[in-house]
Length: 229
Image (cartoon, rainbow, N blue to C red; front, side):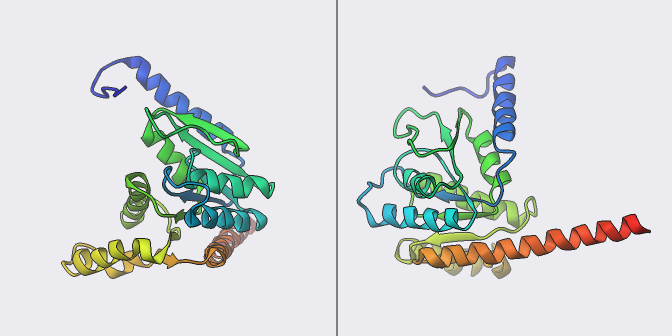
């Protein structure tokens, strides 16, 4: 059922607030979260499914919490890889008229009615995004993260496009059209990596985690110096 958001029902505001409250409460202990996006339509025997599962296994083994959209396809593969390695496996499910049903590999599961509340959870609790092949939803998450970084609404985080053949055409257009026309800057693309290697995904995330830990240590040192004064 399509919901008319132009209505003035005050109850809707309480439902939206409840989704944010539950999300913040249940995810408050998530540390080093990595979101894995991708199509719900990819089957378990597909190479992309198996690659997503391997990526999640490697991340979970190295102490990361894997976050997905909670549904089937690539989302299931991501949760399955983390869950079977006894790592954190978060599913941010969404109510949809078709396709979406929660997969069974979630150690923490949330269900949202509103996409924007769900998106906030992805951004707030992720230190990096892995975009496996997917459709409009995957593109939406990818470009929203790029926009938030471009406008300095969030700190830089790695955006990894997994599958060079799949993503090559999109990047050719971005560089050949948007960049050539001066609609974006070259430095705004520096956060994007393209790979076909699950191991390289882990290496990219580890470098970013090391950078974040260094920044945290530097900030703590500055605070300590201030207290000593």
